[in-house]
Every structure is written in structure tokens, then in C-alpha cells.
Length: 162
Image 1: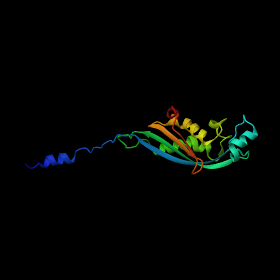
Image 2 (image 1 turned 45 degrees about the vertical axis):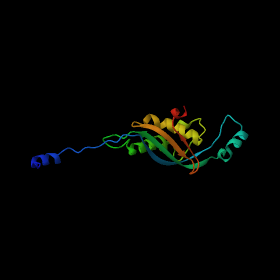
Image 3 (image 1 turned 180 degrees about the vertical axis):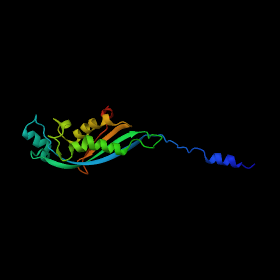
Image 4 (image 1 turned 90 degrees about the vertical axis):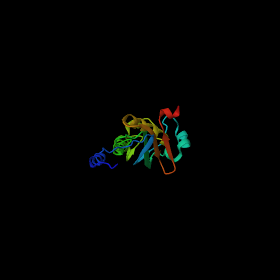
């Protein structure tokens, strides 16, 4: 039996549908900044600092071209397919990390690093604490900081250590 013309028109006007896919995804944004620092523990002797930190204890500082990768985990929104707006994540990284650290002395000019030895390990923990309260969609999964292309540290939050 043939379909009537009205049935065919009604079928063609059917609302389009979107199929939501479920699953945890990891979205990463990378930013760059340049900064100077000195690895130095003021509670220890000069000899101890030179022994532990070597050239990184230079009293005239040294610098790095840092690469920061921040990863957020979660399920994509079924209406957009996005976990989060990457432009928003970029803005957060610029505001909370890059503007504060870029072309700065990490030991002396960054308030949230006051009294912290600015090793790469400590920096990823400090950056986590600066960013985590501001992640609105998903959850902060990792903060990875490259000091050089071959030297980097990654922090996955306090729960990861448990």
C-alpha cells in the first residue's frame, strides 16, 4: 500500500534528534610562560643549597620557557558535545597562572608562591590549588608543567596520592 502525500510530508518535518554519547573524556589546554627562579632553602646553609641544587641555586637566578598543560575530565554535555568551553579554560589559565607568572621572578613576585621553593614539583601543586576551585564543568584531572622538553612534573590532586 502506498504512503499518502500527507504522511510523507509529516515524516519529513519530524524534529531532528541528537544522540548523546556517554563516557569520560579528558580535555587538555596548553599555555606557555617564561619565568625566573632560584632553588634555595633559606633554612639551610649555602653549602647545603649548592650541594642539593647545583646551578639551580645561582643567586642571580635562572629562567625557563615553561609549558603548562591542564587537563579536565568529565562527560560531554549532551546538548553541545563539549565537556567545557576551551576558551573559558584558556581564560582561566591566563588569569590565574600566566598573567601572574609570565616574565616574573617566581621566588619574589608571585604571591601564591611566597615561601615556597619553586621546583617544578611544587609549582604543579601550587597551580592546582590556584585552578581547581574555578573549574565549573568536569573535574581537574592533572596539571603538568614542562620546565624543559625533557623535564616535567605532573600533579593529579590530593586524591591521587591516597
